[in-house]
Length: 120
Image 1 (tube, one colour):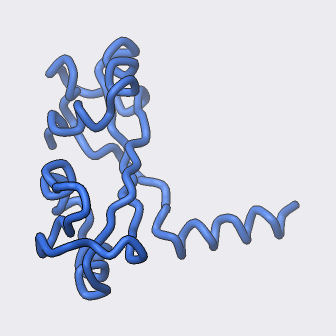
Image 2: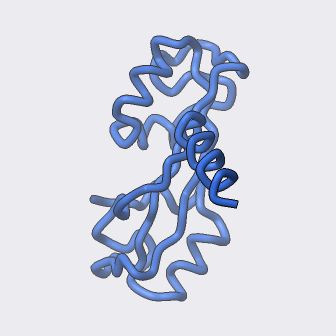
């Protein structure tokens, strides 16, 4: 069992799915109140990029590209704006904190709609 967990952890790291250590935000994207890190949700989006150069750039600082991800046109690389190659992808995964359980539920119902409201 220990070997299986170790293998799964290694695969997750190689796939770019490392768990976020801290929430992306300090303000609740729903209520605008201070976020409580104990009430959080994981936001994950698969992002297609045009080339390995953009993938490396994105992987180095994914948080910097949140607005690009949200505003990206389907099939378009969020960095270069060129046509995305569906075989070159990364998973953007971040913890988002909320002020209360109702705000978390609203976010979980439509994460792509509300991620635009995430503020540092």
